[in-house]
Length: 218
View 1: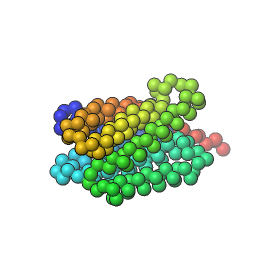
View 2 (view 1 turned 180 degrees about the vertical axis):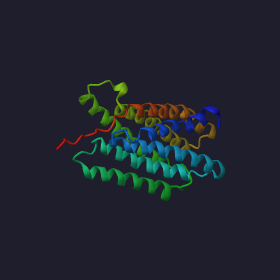
View 3 (view 1 turned 120 degrees about the vertical axis):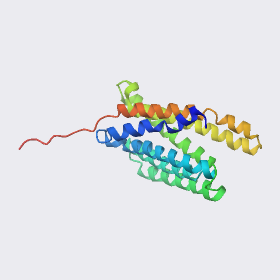
View 4 (view 1 turned 45 degrees about the vertical axis):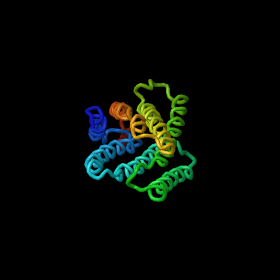
């Protein structure tokens, strides 16, 4: 692992630490995002220790399932499934079914679950775009300090990249392309990952504080 890849892998630690510092202050509707940052750090540590020895992607495959659940929950708290409760449960069910299908039926849980990653990346990009459309209509403040907007931008950039690379990876496998070609597809992942993690760290600084309601004096 080269230096940039190593830094990129563990750059989520900044957001995770900031999440610990600000957790009690922030609006509860952002809790799932903080959980995602913490989970991401744990997953990177476990994957680094486990995958380098065994070569198995088991930790990563479990992580992407939990990450998807947390992101869908996050969008629910932001109102993406408002008055559409069944759609929320349908999204969770679809994520789980696709994960089981790709990891336990079509492939092994120790390998790369590309079909699942394509599916849940597409779902998150759609949810993020929908949320941004709502913000453009309703928000009047600067988007440079709007935590919800910036999180959605990070999701769109990162998961659009993941969606594209996984599609190319599946296509390359079908054509029996060389490992060098596959490696080139994923070569910029470390930069995209680093950008997303640093953006998430910046976002945590701008997450609104929880509202404190004072009881009237009797």
